[in-house]
Amino acid sequence: MSRTAIKDRNFRTLGYIETMPDGRQKALNANFRTLGYYDPRRDVTTDANFRTIAQGNVLSALIYDED
Image (tube, rainbow, N blue to C red; front, top):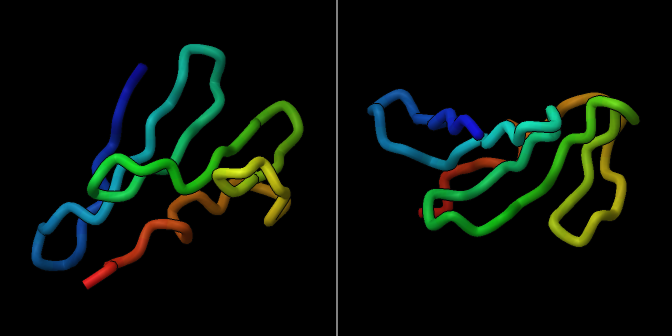
């Protein structure tokens, strides 16, 4: 599993995108709370409750500055 940090312009970590061994991805906030998932086989992004929110990968849009 690999993890990529998403940072703001001041290099402060806003969240992470983890890629699982099967290719699926998970978005996490800076406190490691799950925000959503991306399934490349279905090409669908879901929220943390597995409700479809978009076609394609929009995980980075789920990560934002909570301050």
